[in-house]
Structure formats: structure tokens, C-alpha cells
Length: 406
Image (cartoon, rainbow, N blue to C red; front, side, top):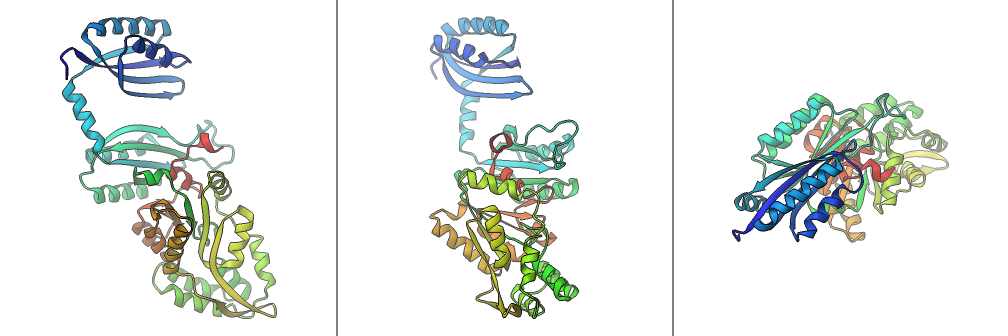
């Protein structure tokens, strides 16, 4: 680098008000200074602005003098730090390193939570580039709807010492401290997800519909026992499905309508679907449940696709049989791939959300697989999970801010 060139970092802090950045950069422009880096944040109307610029030795003194006078006029603090060419070159070399997005999500996030996560980030020799709050500010008296949410996103740069150990540590912290942590590589695909596929039972709705049907048929205990074993991965889903459907033989068709109209929808579904549709996402229900209920949710919330199992009905009664192929875990993953091809998108642009063992293949196949309020085996296997808030938590993992989606 030419000896006559100087690199100077200025840090400005104080009460934020319109015109601060404009006034300071106008001075730099007047002296033909070259801005190498710039960043600004505003926290409760308190400004933090950093500008790294390059100028000549002959102009440096006049620039700093004018900046100091302008800062005094604007009632903000300014600090000057000379940066060596070696330090700048080292910073430039970091650009080739991986970037990660670490998202903290829960009803409430405490200083303890942030301290534990940032310690692990430091222990992994990663550097935090930026921190932003994705959720809106919550009144001291709590949120109006009673469902408080807090989400903070860290943009991190570097190569972890041990990625798997970091992921396991985050899962351990999240489980012990009752909040969620997402670790994603910050690739172009993360910013351009286009298709979101959901399981239905115990994901979009807070029940297993087959259990509801079984209650009406008087075989609730038998079916629930089989369901739990299947969701824990203890027995094959296809086998368990056929056994459970057979127990519904003779149930009146009118019961399906009654159950559909009273489905307990999961917290956050309405808000999530409203945002995803406005943002142009395609959405699908891929369920081991039944098409009757999937189609009901499709009409209510505007899903684009529904793939589930068809119950056979003859003379207004369930026969205890099903029509077509069973939508099991393997089929869900296959459908996700087919939908991605049909929508002409890369598989990395897909998201899958589910809670049971039969969701694991599609969670593994998707660019972003999220275990939602999942069984222990599923949560331990999936790389991402949401266990503390509603389904609209998916929006924060994508990177949406409340200020954009109200």
C-alpha cells in the first residue's frame, strides 16, 4: 500500500436523529475519502455507527478536525482509530470463511441464554458480525395476546473448531434452558426458500385425527397405543396405519365433518400462512393422516397442495380400509422431491416441518428440516427444532422480522 495512504476507523455513538450519517459522510465525500466498510445500528434511539475510510496523509488531519466539529454540532460522540494495512488485509482474508446464522427463539430470552450461546460461539473461534432482534418489542406488561415471543439472530463468521460438537452443545443448552437454537449456514439458499411442507397431525393441528376418530368408534385406547408406538419409531408406520384404520370399521361418515369443524389448530398457523402466502411461498400438507382433514385445512388456510391417505367409505360408513398407497415417511420425502421438481426449485430451497418418526425422511431431505414440538427421537435426529413457541416460529428461522410481517 502507498505510504501516503491512511486507514481510519471512526465510531459514532449518541442519541440518534435524522441527518447524522448524511452529515458525516458528506464531509468524507468532500475530501474524496474512500469508504471501505460501514455499519449502523439503532437500539432504543441510541446510535452506533462505524465507518472505515481511506484517505491521504495530507487530508487526514483536516478530515478528522471537520468530523470532530460536526460531531460536536450534532451532539454525538466520535472516536478515531488508525488501522494498519496488515490488520485490514487480515479482515479482508476473513471474507472467504463460512458464515452462519444462529437464531435464539423462545417465550423469553434472558441474558443467561445469550451468554451461554455466545460463549460457545467464542469457544468455537467464531466471530460475531451482527446481532439483530427479529421479534417486536414486548410491553413490560406482556404481549396483548398472551403469547410472548422473543427472537434474536446472530450473524457469525469463521470455521467452527468442531461443527458437530457445537450443534450438540446448542441442543443441550436449548433443552436445559427451555428455548430454541437454530444453526444454519448462511448460503444463498437460506435467503431464497420457496416451498414449505408440513406434517398435519400434532404439527398443524394439536391432535392425532385418527385418535379422534377412534374415540367416536369406541376403540380410543387401542388406537392411541398403536399411534404412540408408531410415532416413537417402535413399529413400522405402514403396519400400524393398516391396524388402526381397520379398527374404525363401521364409523359413520358424518363424524368426519364434526371432527374437522372442531380441529384444534396449532398456535401461529394462521399468522404463518398469511405471511408465507404474501411472500409468495408454495405450501403443502404431506400427512400420514387423512385427505378429508387435509383438504379442510387447505380451504381454511390456503395451502397449495395436500397429500394424505384416503379412507374408503361405502354407504356412508367407513369400511376399515384405505384407498391407494399409504403416505408414510418414505413417501413424504418422495413427494417433497417431486413438488420441488414441479415448482422448478432446488431441493435446498425447501423446508419441511414435522413432529414424528415418519417425518424424519422428509426433514432430512429438505434444505431446512424443522422438528416441531417433536418426540425425543425426532428432536435428537433433526438439525433444527422448535419446542417453545407456535408454528409461526418457522418465520424467524427463515429470517423474517416482525416489523416486516405485521
